[in-house]
Length: 159
Image 1 (cartoon, helix red, strand yellow):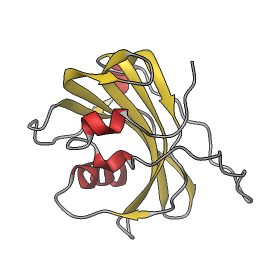
Image 2 (spheres, rainbow, N blue to C red):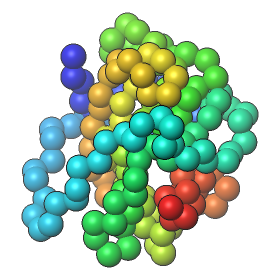
Image 3 (cartoon, rainbow, N blue to C red):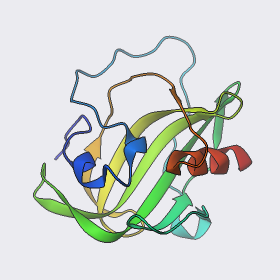
Image 4 (cartoon, rainbow, N blue to C red):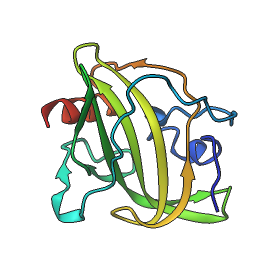
């Protein structure tokens, strides 16, 4: 089952994951003109790099889970996986999620990011796909220092 738009799962993670850009569902955006980014997939678990962060707030672990693609000047695209300390309910499927993976573009110099897609998994370490989501394209978002997304931006810019 494929559902689009970040909707209710974000409510359960609002305190944890404001970075996923919860927005109402929208029609898929038109294909962008110009060079297209390379397709990225999650790397094997053994290749993931831990992202150090405070474990409070329901997150059991965070990982850069793919190679970093440098497909436009100043833009780095990478998968990030969050393992949750406890499962959350996904109203769209009636199931639960123990981890979430999201693909995003990060601009190091501008200190901004743009979420591309997110996947919710029944098990830790992005195992057992439960729900796929595509956020509405709202453009680049600034990153405030000290936030959870700032830790992901720092990790993407270090890789």
